[in-house]
Image: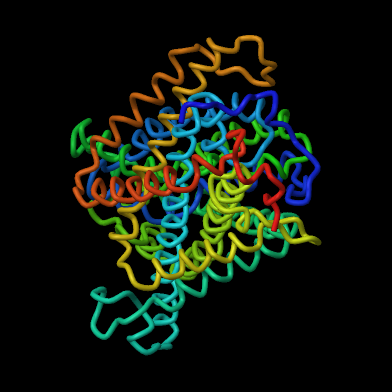
Length: 470
C-alpha cells in the first residue's frame, strides 16, 4: 500500500494509450482561467456580498486567493517534475504511496463530476430566466430536479450541457482547447466590460459600512468563495498533453490564478460600489446592479455572457476527471478498458462519455445544494495531500531537477495545509462528511479487491502479463 511510483519512471512514453501533446503555454493558461472564473464571479460574489461580507467581499476573495496560491505553488513544483496526466493523484502516488494516490484519485473522480453537474445546474437556471424574459415558457417537468419547484421532474437543459461538454472533449484536445480559448476570451471581455462600464456608476457611500458583518463575516466569505479560486488543479491533469509540460505547466498554474484574482478584485470593487450590499441580488448580482442604474440591456448581455462563459468551467473539470480516470486505469488501479484512447484523436473517449453521463445524471435529478455537497471537501483533501507531498519530496529527494521551486519552503505549503484543513472543518453539512466517508469506503473495498493486485507497481500484476491492453 505504501509503494511509491519512482519519479524517474514517471516520464512521457510512446505507447498505444498515450495522450497527444498539443497544448502550449497560453492554451494551458486559458484552461486554468476557464476553470477558475465562472460561477464564482457571476453568482458567489453577489451572494457573499449580500449575506456574509458586505463590501469587504473583496477581502474574502483576496484571502481565499492567498490560501489557494499556497497550494498553487505546490502544484507548480510538482508540475515541473512530473509531466504526466493525473495531477494530485500522480503527485500523491509518487511522494506518499499508492494508497494515498488511490484515495485522492478516487475522491477526485466524484468531486470533479459533481462540480460539472453543479455548474450545469447553475447555467440552466440562467437559461430559464432568460427564456422567461423573452416570453418563452417551457414545460415545468424539464426545468429542474424533483423538489426544486412545482411539477419539476428533471433538469433537462443541465443534462444536455453535460453531454455536450463530453462531446466537445471527445473531438480531441486541440479542438477542446480552441473552444476553451474562445469561451475564455468572451469571459474576460465580459468581466472587463462590467468593470469599464460599472466604474462610472460607483457611489463610494455604498462602501460604508465596509465590515457590516465583522471580520468573521470576511472569513466566512473566504470559505465560501474558495470554491471560486481553484481550477488550476483540474488544468494540471493535462500535463501529458502539454508540448513542454515541465516548463509550461508551472507558469500556466500561476498565470491563471494571477489573472483570475485581478479580475475578481476589479469586479467585486465595482459590484459593491454600484449597489448597496443589502440590495445586491444573491443569484445574479451584476445583472441586478446594472438594472438598478438604468442599464437593462447591459444586464441582459451579462446574463447571456455568464451562461456562455461558465461553460469553460465544465470543460476544464470534465477534462480533469477524465485524465485522472485515464491515469489510474493505465497504472492498473482500475480496469485497462477505461484507459483505451481513440486511435485518431488520442483522447480517452470511453471515460469522457462515462464522466459526461455521470454528471448529467447528478445534474438532472439532484437540487444544486445537494450536488454542491459532493464538492469542496474532496478538492480540499487533494490540496492537503499535494502540499504535504511537496514538503516530503523536497526533503526525501532534494536531488530531483525542479523547473519551479515553491518559495519559503516549508512555510508556503504549510499555509496551504492549514487553510485547507480549516475549510474542511468549517463545513457545516453533516451529509457532506457522510457522503465523503461512504465514497472513500467504497473506494477502499475496490482497492483491496482489485487495485492492489492489478497495480503495475505489483511485480505479480496480471497487467504485466500481456493483458494490459484489450
